[in-house]
Image (tube, rainbow, N blue to C red; front, top):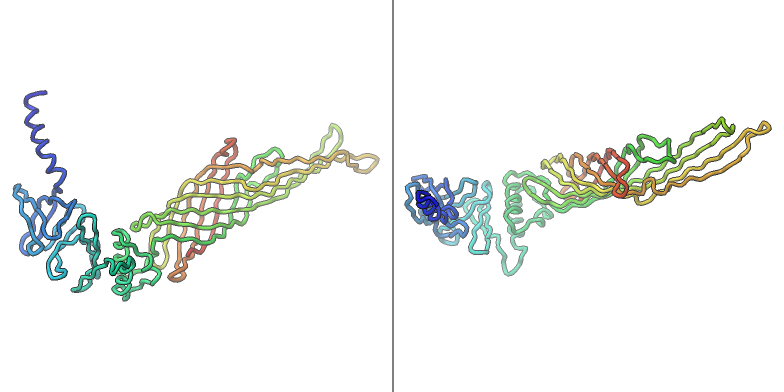
Length: 378
């Protein structure tokens, strides 16, 4: 190793602990001065002091009586508040008509509400784990938050931040929660089947579908949900055609029948543009289609004109049990709008478009179709 590099490496090794524990471009605000520098030891915040390093390298401990607030460039902020007779530092998670404060000591987290001049703890009382919901209900009752919505609150930062932000805006947006409900749809099949026994299958076929919506929240803000919408669709058709064979002067009268039931199981991510009156959304993800019931067959009567009359000379039945009893992989995506009916029920109007590109077993066939649907979720 070059002798000129050794001093540089030594300096880097000495600076490594500093780089790991300090956050540059932090700020600290007192009553008179705004400082910029670095803050140390925020992985274990102390409610009674903060160590601030000025740009000249000097360090100083500030107490909640000296510093009004301090923060990091990523937006996190701590404020000095008087609570239980003394000033302490709290992380401010949400600000507005009601502020949400957090104080961490070791692995313990305490959430508090600041409303006006009062700070109210959301912690457990007498061992009741739902005590904080009673506090929320009492402090937020002057805006549109229903008892059921309060019941969805969790003693976690992301959940409480979303709750308080809704209250501060006084806008009742759809709350991301587990929802389930029935679905009724209209499916327009395209490229339904490929079978030598069915030469006259319609290119398009309209049929009803039934199913359910199940959605699980992944993110509160933005609102991202994991959604599955299993749907069952039944379709059938009858087609006829005649074939004349000049070689033996016979005519075949063919009747083709198809009765089939599909089960579609998409797994999609939904992005909801939340609004209190209506919420548009988009969604997409992989999908599986199963042919769960198939009856596909053709009847053929071959007749010949003899002595001025048609006589039946042959009857045949062709069965294609595997015509649609397959497993298809594909993708499904769509868009729609959610319209709240009341605090408990939401209506959904939307369309999904599915593309199934291959049969899992044979690699054959390609199926595409849009599906328009309405649903109600609870």
